[in-house]
Amino acid sequence: MTMLEIKEIISAKKKYLDLLLIGDEQEDMIDRYIDRGRLFVGFLSTCAVACCVITEDAPGVVEIKNLAVRPDFQRRGIGGLMLKHVEALYEGHIVMLGTGETPSTLTFYRRCGYSYSHRVAGFFTSNYDHVIVEEGVTLVDMIYLKKQL
Image (cartoon, rainbow, N blue to C red; front, side, top):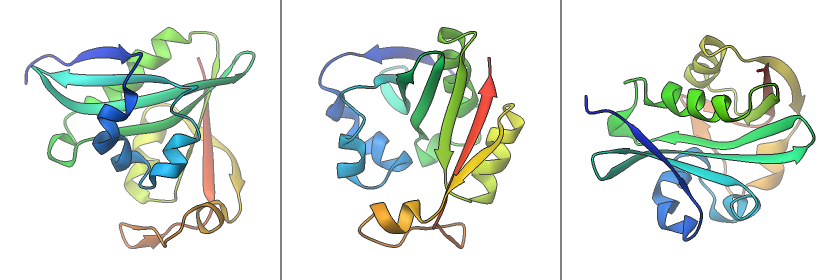
């Protein structure tokens, strides 16, 4: 596989909406963090295949709001490379991230060193205008994971 090139996108972030919607499938939810977040896009040659948005909401704590890899490029280590890239930028910080209870997603983050922090009951049912089902699991609560860098 060609080497992944990761670039920070400063302007015209919505140009990558198709990627962002893989990680967060409702545009108005993305609008809540895209302007204040740092957007990183992973490219193979000139093709955008992955993205990660991270926000700094408290001193020493950052949150990954969106991490997505195009389905046809998943399970190739690209998500892990994106995580390592942003983690390197925030050494000494605590990284938080929220996700649904999708088995493969939780397994991925645990393999990357993240552990359970807390749960926000009813997050998906309260904030999304439709039911979200991933891997046969209806998403209800947001599961927060954390990692001390």
